[in-house]
Image (tube, rainbow, N blue to C red; front, side, top):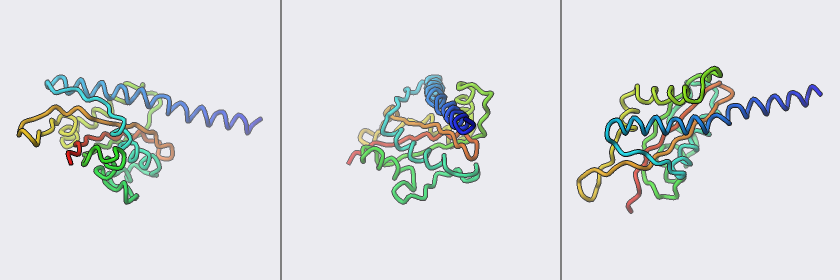
Length: 176
């Protein structure tokens, strides 16, 4: 009986984090697009291929043991950089990518919206991260600007370090 109760509590504990992550991601997209709208920029559409690229790094980061190990590097040679991750995840639809990563200690008293707001504030509080969120993509064919519309992000919970980790990706289409 004690063993069964432990299993049930473990499953419930794991579900409580994973159930909220999708809602945090949904709220994060709203926050990002509101930020872009306030500056007369086009809204981002989530692209599952880009999300897959972000997921590669998020899955790796969900296994690190400390916040000090949060990095853009990945020990897998096929996934070592954001550009390699996006090429693998999109089957070469995208050629290069920039990536934002933030992490903070999980606080069970925060709502999904508060966690999404914290992720967004972390990105907007850093000039390089903010520039990625607010960028427009140069049109290489007409020397103008085209709206940046493709975007992806994943939010994960790292149980061993008790961290919420968010990965955003901003790729460029492969025109070859």
